[in-house]
Length: 392
Length: 62
Image (cartoon, rainbow over all chains, first blue to last red; front, side, top):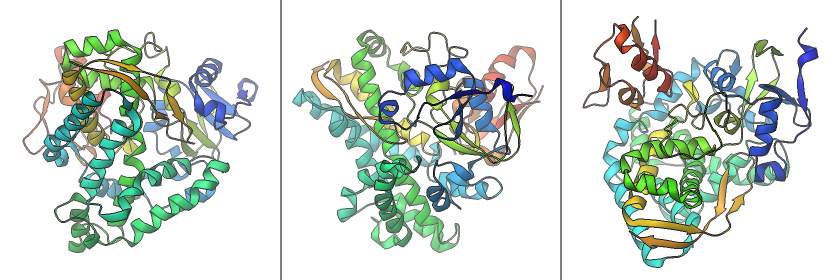
């Protein structure tokens, strides 16, 4: 029997304390076992690199039908790309990624590079600012507004909607309950949106045109826009903020990058490995599955801890070191397999634009005490005061 | 060994091309072209790397 070997822990993944700094918890659980039963949360946590990657690839055993950790949200997500399994998932994913694939995004590169360059140039003039509000939030917000073709008051709502969309993926705690109405407002807006409300020539408008032509289902257009707003903001913001925070914390690494900007893709992979953008993602166990000697029974809930896998010393040497030359292309932060981040091409465009503007224009970054954003799912800084932003 | 592309799954992220530029490339339309499908000993490491880095698991070696 495997029951004698079950590792258990009463750690609460979604306590304020864990969310503020999950890495000590990840390390403790990962050293305990690759599968740990979390009695407080009622889930099985996957903590090590290989089992996580295998689980992400194995949609037959580990279904996305319970990608969130509360029933109400899993109910609301039925029929979406994020929560569907093949064969339904296949068509939804194709419609979602049609406009997000690197080939579809090629035309955006120069405008995103220019946006990032203008932002960074202005911040060099200012010298001190909040890296989150003035750069990490400013760029993705501009990009998403232009991409979808948002007009009017809705542009002031998307940041709050994005945050809420990640909060409601958690268990039904106070944060989830408080954010349900806000996430619901986004859902309502997207499901009643008309193509004519979006800027002519925008990608958002093109998606509605595709629905009018019958190329995608009539309800798909609003759903795709919903996913752009819900998934595309918080994560990109977090990644850009983390990059600036790590460059400031590791000036030697920033200098290596400045000396060789061809390392930008490698450095961004390291930023993503070093701090995952999501605390956990759920899976529904569809068939009894043994993982490293522990039987996970059908019907149970899995919590995939991306950040724990990304710091697994069984896979990465010296995993707690931030090294811009490491190039960990197989990090888990974008997930893996059929549900891997659909927006990763756009995320790379935005991050590469910021990083190349930084290395070109800024020789040294000094920051004050960062403030974390407490969210049930997205792992991000809320504020990062930049004290010195020295012109190159 | 042979490298096999699940074309409907491929989203053109291009990470495989960076891992194995001798074996595959994205064309001007961003479609993945396999230049060498039958993998010999010399190309095995880069073929494995290309399979490993595909974010959507669209490549496999058989």
